Length: 113
Length: 112
Image (cartoon, rainbow over all chains, first blue to last red; front, side, top):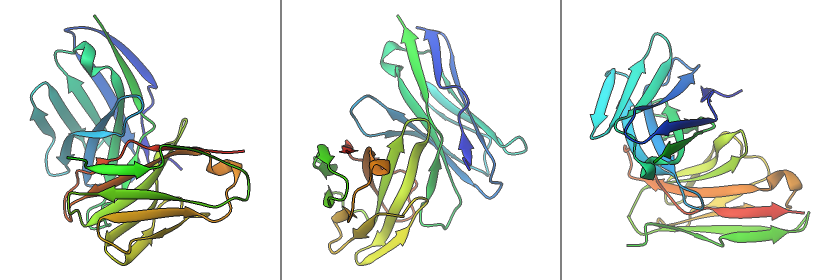
């Protein structure tokens, strides 16, 4: 049973606009969340993370929001750039489990110039 | 700066054959992982290691074995390949206590 879900397989956004990628999780014990970005034929690369003690974390154009009561997190990219076109995976972990992360199925983002 | 290197990058196996995937990292990371990625399933953890000589099962360990004889290497073995093991395999590593993992480029394995 998928513990981390990304219900939108794909998303298209115009360059300069905001991209919002969503992720839901079912395990209330998860307390650390990450976003990874993946280009074709490459491995995922770390983008941004957030712990459950926060509800927002920002890094440049990327902001992750966490709503613990809804078991929902989102990644905002502002402004979106063509180079952001990639597959984005969210992942969740329970602290002290040997860094076992559960990944979502990914959302393919296309930023249209 | 190589990071995480996986060998081979592509492989085709016949059902019942065996093979070993090699992962090497040069970042002195304590933790190493093997994931598989399948369409519509995301990345699923097969096995992981928190240090040299130690391994543990992840989410989908059946049909695989691993060994971590040296800190920098993590081997994934398939003793008798099955078509259900057709997948893209990713190795990753991280520092102990860090949540950021560094991934290799992946190995595309097809079992016919």
